[in-house]
Length: 357
Image (cartoon, rainbow, N blue to C red; front, top):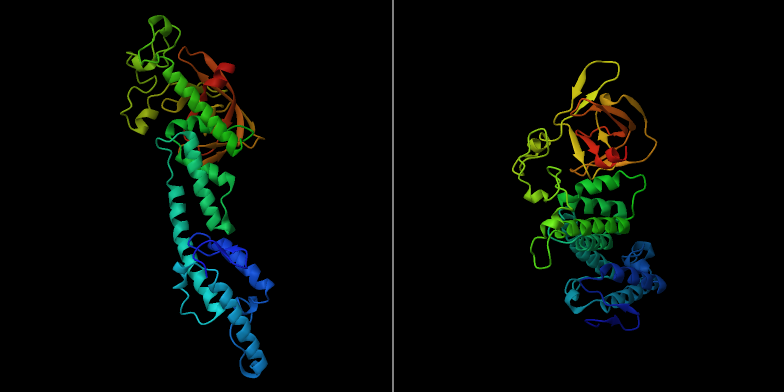
């Protein structure tokens, strides 16, 4: 018996604390080839009894059992040998090893699954977070071949752990007709991250100083809409009918401080106030609402698009149509190709679609 390396004469690795599945597969094949499997895991794991216990049959079983025992004992490391030292047959050795390592694997599998469920990006980059989740899934698949993690499950785990700032972008990607592969999804997120960093860093020189006033004139404030300064430097105090005023509000208060519009219903003189309900979203690829009553025309949606919300739940796009709203100047605004997504509680106005139309 060797403590490390390979088993002399068998061409396989010695069993240690980390290679049980590989060792088991190789050893089982070897025992079958040597016609020893019956006494280890087959139908003859105990000596012949009663009428079958002839001297010849008993002698043959004893010979095969001893040969199988020898093969098993010489293929395990010295640190494991103590676990099978009291076993009295090749079958009991096999069962003891299986129980020992399956128990360890179950505990490790549980730890890995818990780690995957709680995996968060934190301060890691997109690439680092993808590698972390991929490695966890790979280890889990090694321990649980019967229920391996699919690429779709892996992607959901990644989406669940991403920083909240990626939610609008991920939602727009999930709403696309063609879904990206895992590698394409990683590249899209990395590209989005790169653009955001360039946007934030573009206003500073390498020495950390602010750009000149001439440089700032090229930029538009995303809060008040005026040129010459950035959003972080904006002194405009927004009203309740505009964008969120402070980051200290609760989630419900933030929803309640968005743009106000009204939706008109054809054939009537009444309007529905969408105050606190219409969110202007620059990351959304389509107008989205869960309220079927807002549509002036509606038809079945033939695509397979789905929307993933912030709580990681998935909602299918059921229908699409036209919604007419009133702007601040009371002029009607027609929103085309609006997605009807049952289960979505807020109405999203896509900046991209609004500009294109």
